[in-house]
Image (cartoon, rainbow, N blue to C red):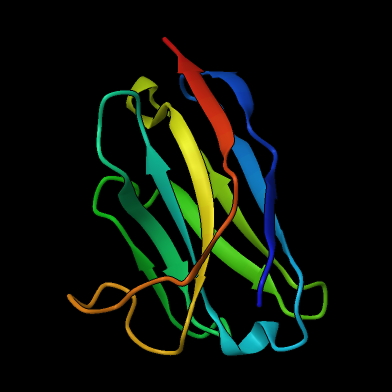
Length: 124
């Protein structure tokens, strides 16, 4: 079992930055691939970024490459999403997720644990 709690959301102007945090419970945190997803009003949830258990591999959606950075601190059982150069289209609820080892962008991969989400609003 893994419990995830996101924080760090808020209101920011376009071009600004935010850093989301996700605190995880569980003794085997470093075994999990960790990911961030987002869901904008009226839209489906979409993948944003993911990081392997060791932190050695990362994956990003094309829409955030070069602007967002995912990282993790296994000693603190936490994962972060640094969001820079924010755009109004980044406005969404952001969710932290945990899944088994593997390639999180694969067609059959599934994240098994989800947080409650944190809201990010980017004003123009």
